[in-house]
Amino acid sequence: MKAQLLSTALLCCILPATADDYTGWQVTNPEWQLVFSDDFNGTTLDATKWNSIDYVGWNVSDWRTYQSNEPELVTVNGDGTVSLWGKYGNYTSQSNPSGAAPTYACGGIFTDKTFNFQYGYVEVRAKFDCAQGAWPAIWMMPTDGSNWPKNGEIDILEHLNYEGIAHQTLHFNNADGKNTSLGTVNGGSTAYYSDVDSKLDFHTYGVEWTTEGISFLMDGKKTLTVAHQDNNPNWPFNKENNPFYLLLDMQLGGDWVGEIGNIGDGVAMTVDYVRVYSTPQVPEPTSTALSTLALAILAGRRRRK
Image (cartoon, rainbow, N blue to C red; front, side):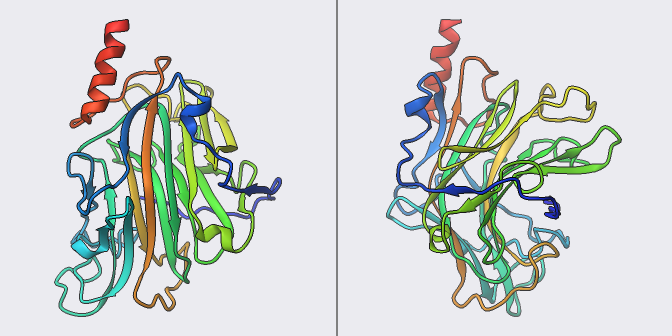
């Protein structure tokens, strides 16, 4: 579940984001090993890596309100990209589980049943459409998501409507047990797009999660670094046995985003690639279905120990 992030704090400074010169994580971090990746080749989703987010029929009024598992809301485009759509039509969604009348419907994919990990670097190259009510997101949730945000939430990117900010946020409980958010808007150097049009282009969004702390990145530049809060007994991000999985989705509407406007034939977040790296200095990822490449890398690392 995603909370509404209050963005009333002063913005520390402007960080123009440009993707042109970014050469990729492993060029400057060669010791990190690729353990999960998808370039979305072909025309079908790789079921060994992803499942469509399927919360239809839960009847909840949060980010999942219009969640749907209609196939046309997740399209692998044949050009090395996947698009996750928000549309209006005769769909089955949580707001209209029967699908008998027009409703908003949103598509997304996650690795909840295929891949999860604790510590590593995640990088996603993506672009998205802007519209009133559009809410594309790249984020991570713990495999034990009960009593949110007890075990945390890591939002690598959230974008609202037409604004020029990339929201990157941690959700957790503070020392008093109260729901708390800390991110690029209310805790770091706000990640702005360099101009109006650049937010419609491809950018890379990343999070580096180690035993020392968590850093958010945009186009290879760090936007916020948070050390683990050892003085907070409720801090979940260095808790033992608390792995996370990935979610990519386009959502519509909600209290934080506002009313949905004219979305025409639909709005989409299009993803070029997803990559997850691990380093020998942090625990190995856990998974129910690691790729052949990941299994080979992990086997090699185990032999070196």
